[in-house]
Length: 140
Image 1: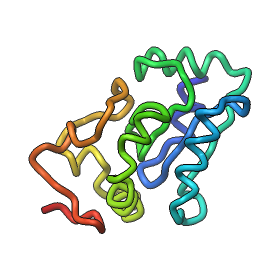
Image 2: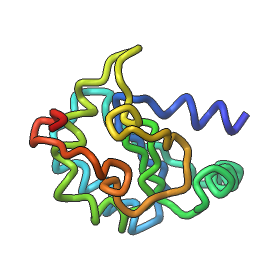
Image 3: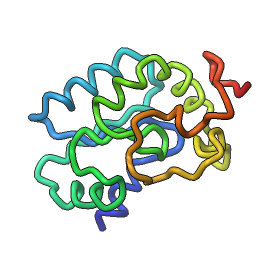
């Protein structure tokens, strides 16, 4: 049931944050992402206050149970500090994300690795060493 709940919130073409309302790091992550212009439905904030089973699920699937849990597409990038570390890359990543369509390429295909629901990583640059993204998300 938890698996289905989490997977129903995550899509290739959006950013999903799992937060607790009382968490200052969660508020900071939301504020950071609100600096960007998201199309309606492409940024979702899911409050999991009181849902310990969701955090247990994240422990099993991402290696961390802390919040926020930030997903860019289906890729868990980690928490707030990981999001901060990616700040300079976010415009390009979000541009790629905005071009996602059902049955289209997902982020893993851009980086050549399957990372969906993998342990949190500190930088997506580790996942795409052979490629670079232009400011609008084109592979070069």
